[in-house]
Image 1 (tube, helix red, strand yellow):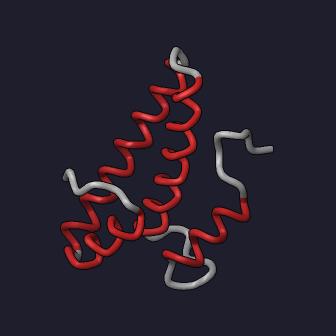
Image 2 (cartoon, helix red, strand yellow; image 1 turned 180 degrees about the vertical axis):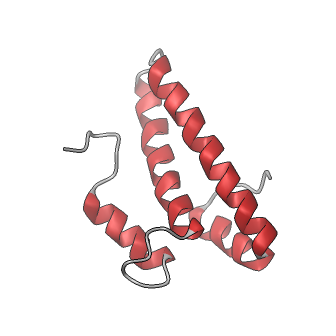
Image 3 (tube, helix red, strand yellow; image 1 turned 90 degrees about the vertical axis):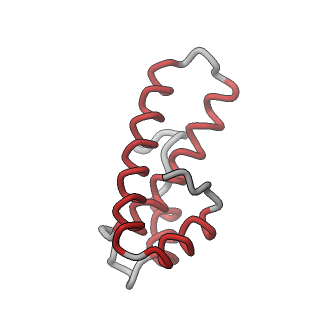
Amino acid sequence: MANKDSISKERTAELIAEFGKDAKDSGSAEVQVAILSERIRNLTEHLKTHKKDNHTRRGLMMLIGKRRGLLKYIKERNIDEYRELIKKLGIRDNI
């Protein structure tokens, strides 16, 4: 039932396996950041072709803000874990 801009259950399971503590760890901040990053990448690709889709752009900005808050939490909790996470995800350190 997911649309083309969302991520599939399989991809979500891959991200959970890669960034989570175990196979059912979908709630940790690291996993949530990885899932949000994947959704942000998909929406960014969508907006490259649909430049005037302002509803999607607003949703993208909300996801970026949510990811920024989670990254800030991770950075305050454990700076080494934060650095490793942004390196694996390929995102900039702008917090």
